[in-house]
Length: 109
Image (cartoon, rainbow, N blue to C red):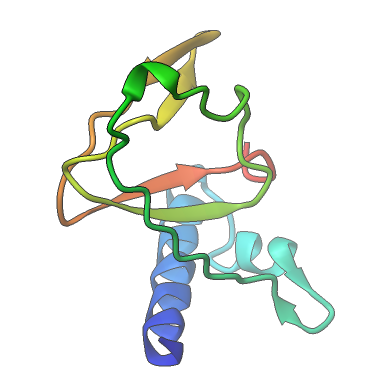
């Protein structure tokens, strides 16, 4: 898991460099902006959400955006529920097996 987390961190850093390039910023601008005094604030959370046998009872989480910088979200093809906020409307993100959703959090926005 540690090895996997290191690779995810590198992927996130590469994505931030691409964002910088496309925004006309210095390559490491976002990396420097998001790093704390002890390095990156990087965390890994592993969750398993099996399909609910009574989906009509699911309440889900309140509507929210992610506070962080770059969020890498792995999906499967069975459990839906992820939405994104576009033009003040919540839009469903269809789950896709073997995919990574790159979510830009509030700090990047």
